[in-house]
Image (cartoon, rainbow, N blue to C red; front, side, top):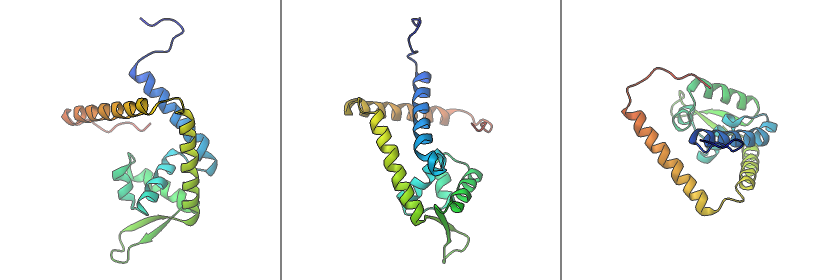
Length: 158
């Protein structure tokens, strides 16, 4: 039984609190650039590869193809991304960061990382490593459970 006035010490509440922290940091740091967390994830992913395709994004990030297309259109219009057709196969479109996109993405990465470091300043390396190890263990256990389950219908978008 939980004492009145104390925070619940359970998995769901802890994860929800962390999600809210990450969402707030993203809103605060990438929002002023006209971006959201999903846009930022795409830019960061493309930056790390030196360019990518929409298919690469859908395979690496938990985003469906139509949502990727909308995000890419938005960031092309904002001059953060450009589309380039491959000369060897005109059907393939490569996404590359523009100079503005690269500068903005690098600046935002710095801002987000500084904010995260501020929030984590009182967490020891050992505690952080334990948190990451626990997250990976829980993620692997969940993936194994899901793989063993019969297929289910489409999930609602949140």
